[in-house]
Length: 140
Image (cartoon, rainbow, N blue to C red):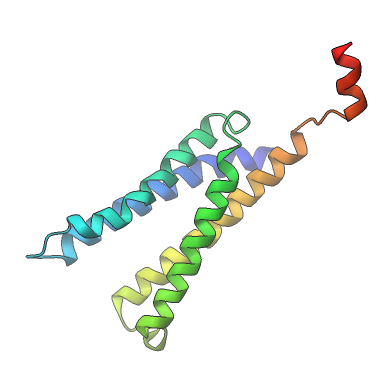
């Protein structure tokens, strides 16, 4: 339980820093083009800091977000790996700045996925489930 108290704010800070880095990359690397269409694709990424904030505040109240967070992280990792392979960036390891940023985001997302899985495991362990017989006895 002690490590979970440290993981939740760390997850929130990582997600906020990631969004700030993505927004600054869009502003810096898109001169003379309109960045609005590209920002539309990243708008769903804003949900991750919000979910991390809610999980930090009260993980038991917002535990319904945990499977959504896990699914979103898995989709993000998969899409980043596919994009790296399709664009041919995997051949230029540590040569291009974009490749380094991709690997930083990939490793950060893998650590965030591991953190969310630890939080999910901890909430499943502390959730009290009633047996069907116990529910019938409570109703009587």
